[in-house]
Image 1 (cartoon, helix red, strand yellow):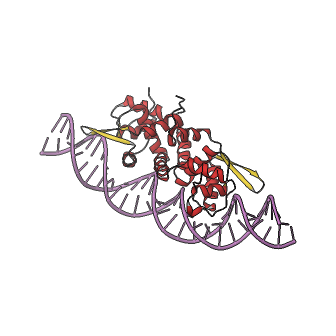
Image 2 (cartoon, rainbow over the protein chains, first blue to last red):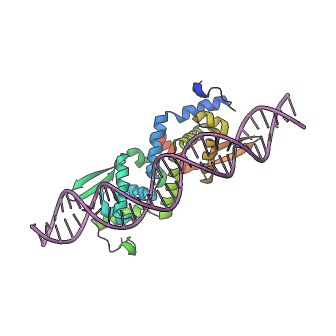
Length: 120
Length: 120
DNA sequence: CGGACACCTGCACAGCTGTGCAGGCTTGCA
DNA sequence: TGCAAGCCTGCACAGCTGTGCAGGTGTCCG
């Protein structure tokens, strides 16, 4: 295996074989970047609380999310805008109420296996 | 269930029952904060690459990590300092070489089920 | 002993991010 | 039609974060 890109081929290595393994493990740079962006959205206590509430409880309105998390409604609105831009949640209008739900299954997996500690 | 704290009890709600469910789902605020900090450490492409390499390949030296990720060694060193402070990785000295490995099993779960898409 | 190597630190800079407040828009109800 | 409720936006501010460079410390080998 010779996975070291040409622009770093002249650098010294301790264990060249393991370096190639590591490069294979990291995989596509774009894939890593996409996940880093996902994690960035999970990296705020407010947004994480919103996602946990949506994952467990299902469709919820902004006002209810604000009460449940202790945030003010502009903060919830702002957080949901970011989560929507990242494709993690989606809102559905019902009269003057908009109910949001979690649509990113990969994030749902992370919440289940990571934060909530589910084994299944 | 009356889980709404006293300081928000006077706020309007759309569906009070679901609000209580959501509060139960969010759980302890400290737990959420701890996970948000973990996700913040995963939210950088460089650090995420390092963690993926360490998770799959095992103990690796700073120099090898730098070559594998394309980062410069001070950047790797800085990233590892943050990861060590967060308790995600741990280093072991071997002569003038320090090999790092992933020690946070919860993060390992997230990497496996989330980023790497393992089903088991 | 001296030099090369592996790793770490300090510092200064630019960029992003979360937060609060005030206010506006749309919808539904009396 | 008028008012209240639900939701959204803009703006300004403080705080954190990643980055690069120069240089320092400790370790090994000839």
